[in-house]
Length: 386
Ligand code: GLA
Image (tube, rainbow, N blue to C red; front, side, top):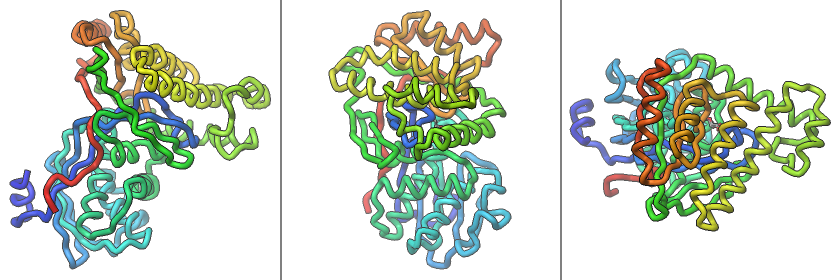
C-alpha cells in the first residue's frame, strides 16, 4: 500500500487511514425522514495514504480510476466552480467535497496529497462513496489535528455529498462508515443521532449473513430517490408534522385517511412501518432471537417493493429464490433500483441458498450475481501509528 503513494507522489505518506462500506440490516429510506436505521460496516474498506501539504494544493489519485492525478487548489473548491464540483461527474467530487465541507465549517484545512485504494465494490449499493468521503475526512482530521468527533465527521461528509457532489442522500451511510464497531450493528436514530452498538455475533447463533450484489444499476434510480424524498417531505407537510418520524405507528390508519393525495399514502405507510420494523428487530436482537429477524427482513422488502417502489426484478428474485431455498429472510439493502440484497441464513444452508440464487439468475437470463458472506467490521480508523 505505501508503494502506491510513493509510486504516485515520490515520497512517503504521513499516515494511512481507512473507512468501510456498509450494508443496512433494516431501516430503509427512513434516514431522510428522521427515522431509525441499523447498518453494519463491511470488512471492505477505502484506504487512503495521505500527506499534509502547506501550499493549499490538493492532489487526488485513485488506483481504481483512470486519469492520473487530479490537482486542485483548496481556495477554489466550490460546488459552483467548474471542474471541482459534482460536474466533474467522477470520484474526485467526493474527496474534494469533503475538503470543501470542512473548510465551509470554518475548520483549518489546507492541502494534501491523497492516494486511495478501495475494496468496496462500486455501484453495488454498498456505500463506496461514503467510504471514500469518510476516509478523506478521518485522514484530514488526523493530518490537521482537527479533533472532530465521529458523528461530526459523518455530518460533514453528508454535507459534502448533498451540497458538493449533488446527491440528496441521508446521513446513514456516512454514520455507518464513521461510527460502526466490529461485531455490532449500529442502531441509529437519525433524528438526534442517538445511537447504540448492538452485538451481532451471527456465527455464535449458527447464522450467516450473505450479501448478493445483483451487479445491476437501473438508471431510473437517481431521480427516483430524490422524488421519493420530496414525496415524503410533502406528505409530512400535509400531515402537519416536521417529518414522517413524528407519525406514530398506532396512528398510521388515521394519518393515511387524512392524506387526500393517494399517491403519498404508500410512502407514508412504508416509512412508518419500517421504523416499527427497526424497533421490532432491536427487540429480537436484544432477546437473542436473531433468527426471528429473518421474516422482518422479508416483510421490509415487500414494503420497499410494493409501497415505496424502489426494488427491481433482480432484487425481488434474490429475495424469492433465497426464501424458497430455505433462507430465514432477505431484503434489498440501500437505495434500491439495483445494487445489493442481504440474506439471513442458517450456517448449514448458506451454500445451497447462494447456489439457488445464482441458478435463479441464470434461468432468468440475468448476469451472474456476486455473492459473499459478511460480518460486522470496524468503522473508520487510522491504520498506521501517528
Ligand atoms: C442510500 C442513501 C442513504 C439512505 C438509503 C436508503 O444508501 O445514501 O442515505 O437513504 O439510500 O435507506
